[in-house]
Length: 94
Image (cartoon, rainbow, N blue to C red; front, side):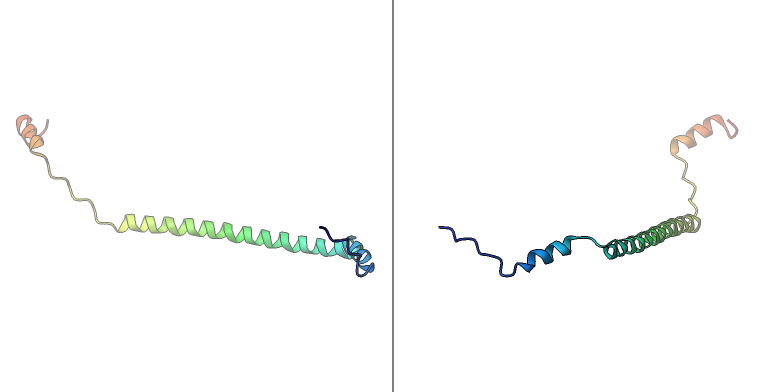
């Protein structure tokens, strides 16, 4: 069983809601101010991220270059027995 429809408690509510949905020049101005501030914030954030990216890349390159410069020099590999035999067979200046 369904209940009968309930009438509006205040008919002024429909009028109030219709007015709230209607955009005014003040609403347009507020939206424009928000968009200007939002775009400025996005531009600043993008610039900040770009600077951070370059800084991270530069620091990473510095760490790699420092590690390559500070590592110990590679020791000479010992000659294999086959190389020693080959060199002794052909002599020193083959």
